[in-house]
Image (cartoon, rainbow, N blue to C red; front, top):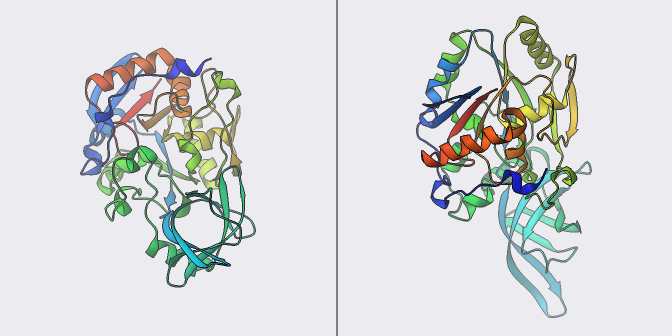
Length: 348
């Protein structure tokens, strides 16, 4: 299984830099078995059945991108230089693992000032990442980050434009509850309150789980033989109530449809051949062709990058040739790609 097996040519003009407005007006490519239909997200109720269950990731994206001044004291006095920091994940000791640009000239012990009263000290580095200890903690840290931070837009959007105030709303789901993600569960961005209510009224149930999406979701695969790729790990939780709801739907013959690859990966991590159990921890599950899905019957997801692990995941669900055909159709029909783009509903 080679990386080139999951490649395709994508016109740059199809990379979305803003979402559809309203959210549910985005296009929806529906694949049911061998059938393909062009629709819109607000048509989703047409493809659902009473007794189905949608599994939603309720993680909340933090404004993880910070701009500051690093300050160094030397024999020549105090020198300052600009720096951009993206929070990746907190460590058990309260420090943060971060990406920094530029990072090469940053020294341990330097102070980085982001806003009055809000700074961090560099305490170490590993694999191109820095470790920072912030001057604030708890609610004070959350408030300062909210005031000074920007949404951490994916690299393919950030290369085209800077994050702005509109992204605070656009890059957050309407059911976000638990802070910790540095990337959005983007399939969920298409839902508004009206659509959720319409789906619930037809007898479709919802279950919420939490997977804090990390920046590793954007890392490229660097090996030709994809079996040698090691996934990044992300923290997730499936509560006892969530597990019971999913198992009840399976027992009654309803379909379990994951909204987003993050929800899919999480519930598959918590599942075995008998069903799904309460689960908390780090998952690095790598779903690729040959994987046997245990609880997921369908998936709603956006259109993914060529040669990405997410392209491999959808190929595991639908088959590689089928997915390449669907992507060729989406490109020909000018669907919008990636985080702010259109969606697909995959029902094998």
